[in-house]
Length: 126
Image 1 (cartoon, helix red, strand yellow):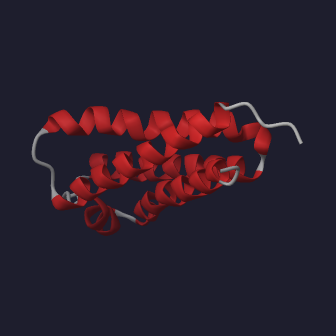
Image 2: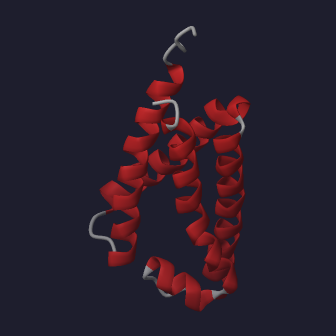
């Protein structure tokens, strides 16, 4: 049980690192999200989003290995995946690439909730 929190944070860090490839440009963004990202404004916004996801992934990865950061890491991960789900689920039919993101975020949300519960449980004395 004690490994659930760091393993979850590491897994969610990897999940959040995937969009970092979008920094490479419109072609990669289109492959990631199944949308036409050739509009320069949309491309800029999505590339910036990729950088922010990279930063979040780095923080989540750090939190996996530094116990003092785990609570904040769990909060950051929960806010990230829950906010996307709150925005995406009522949006109606999504392109297949985004539908995959929704499924992965649901799995991440469940893992993060379980890890948060474990994190909040009192530690047994030795």
